[in-house]
Image 1 (cartoon, rainbow, N blue to C red):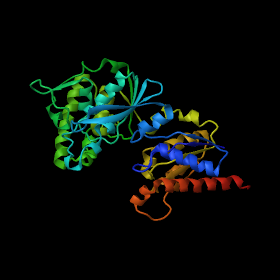
Image 2: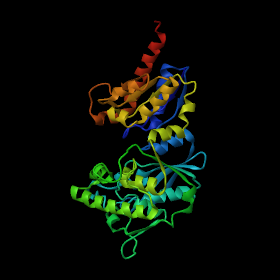
Image 3: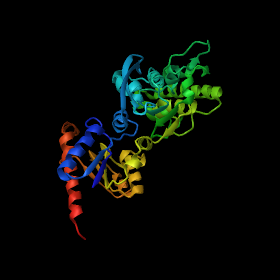
Image 4: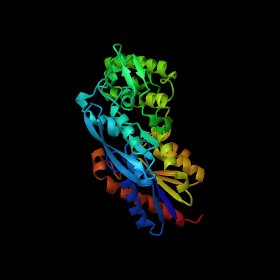
Length: 382
């Protein structure tokens, strides 16, 4: 029997790499003669760099960039084994955890560091960028990111505006002639699982601004500035940057990446699975084990890792075991995707803190329970 392990991380407790190691340990105990392949997976969020480096090989890089509060931070990224593909997580440069709760105000944060990270990857030889844009602290419409890449935004007096969300209303002119020339030949793929437009009730500001510290009054101010900024950019490049699905992702970074830099916005899990050549890895596989910290209806609706994996397994007629920390309403939607089942790691009622503290033991035990059930199934003769 050949098994493929392709799980997402359990946020705050187990990385995808650690989960694959635990599955290897469980398989060695229950199926000592089985062939196993580990393929840590992510969907563009936390752990994407780790997962792709493990699957594809390459170098982990660290670059000092401008953080969301305009202070330096050290951001990690990956240059994959081909030497031409870079994997970046926006949260490493411009993430919400860099902003203390008491200081959260998206008028004062910037995506400048994300642009610096992109520029460094290109200078290191990357011809293709995979950018996960979850977990941002910003609502600057990508103004900061574009500025770091060479764009110039000026006010009525012709002076450069600060690269923050609060400066959007002051932008009167946008000049993209100074963008890094290498960008023209660089393929940019944005790992994005939201479809929000840039503006309006379902746009960047009103949907995600409050979790970044925006009060209703701040949201109104930011929305007005974003609308003005989007119009200035549209007048400059001759393309609408506000209305396409995903434009509102990461505080409007999606608008700048897709609308200005002509990046491709793709489902995070689909882009990752294509990068690691998942369909090729499925050949001769009898069973796939996947999972995430919690599976529920949103996992199904937004095509999170277990669903993305299951869809490809369905095409190859390979059954799927899903190990998760918890199950919520709607998780049964997985069963409609392919032949599959779900096993939780928790073995009794317990607090989340207890589950996190004992994550390794709980996961290993759950994997062994599930593999034992598979072994019983192999012995049934109907």
